[in-house]
Amino acid sequence: MPASCKVQNMQTKQYEQAVKAAAYLRQQAPDVKPRIGIVLGSGLGAAAGILKDAVRVPYAAIPHFPQSTVAGHSGQLVLGSVAGVDVAILQGRVHFYEGYSPQEVTFPVRVLGQLQTEALILTNAAGGIRPGLRVGQLVLLADHINLQGFHPLIGPNEPRFAVRPGAGQRFFDMTGAYDAELRALAQRTGESMQLPLEEGVYLAVSGPSFETPAEIRAFQRLGADLVGMSTVPETIVARHMGMRVLGLSCVTNLAAGLAETTLSHEEVFEAGRSVEARLATLLQRLIPQVAAVLEQTEGR
Ligand code: HPA
Image 1 (cartoon, helix red, strand yellow):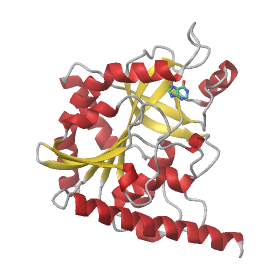
Image 2 (tube, protein in one colour):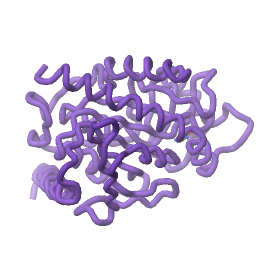
Image 3 (cartoon, rainbow, N blue to C red):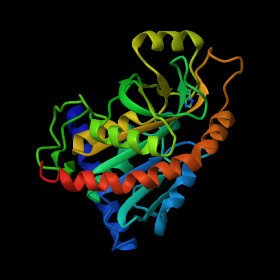
């Protein structure tokens, strides 16, 4: 079999599996129609507590769903609402460094697409590269640099993933991948809670080791403000489907070589915990406003 056929099967398989997983989730929570999806990264899972009438579905119960193997990623999909707006929260994600394929890493976001989610809020733990960034700070993603060594859309295109007319194309624009309107909304919401949000460029590596100080100096020269091991594949498939994306990094540590201390997963996890409450409030206030933007721009 030619390599391209194998890849085609993979893409089609991912689509068919996402359809099945979404059908299962609709059975679990028939009244929840999530227009907004949220992915909670390392140490940030408690923000799922903002959902009312929450239906919690363990990843292990969802057909074809990958299981997180990392401490700090709890592994459940929570369906519920905030101020009358239906939301799906992925509490924990899987990563390429765990040995998952690009299709598996992006599968949960594909499933959100099948649930007709139109806006995706991606959160992560990240190392701060730009001078002046502090541990515990939340930073909006303005753009990204993909140095993970893979692209989740390699292989023949599967247009059925589209959630909006015109989406699902082979080639699509990544200018403005992190939605300017949603970012402005997040800025204003942050200001209303005395939480000024800076913006930054997120550079994704595969991990699992943290970087060397020389790599961080190189990334700084490339224009990166933050470094992490996730988010970028999810943003790419979300844009492929036509979702609007908002990215939020929690600076859990200064990147390698920028602080006196050495890096550990525990440090990253604990720093995430310290901002969970602020993140939860921000998301709670943001959700109704994002929903209003989706209403206004319907059919645009
Ligand atoms: N590097 C890569 N990924 C990370 C870091 C880091 O310093 N902190 C949290 N995730």
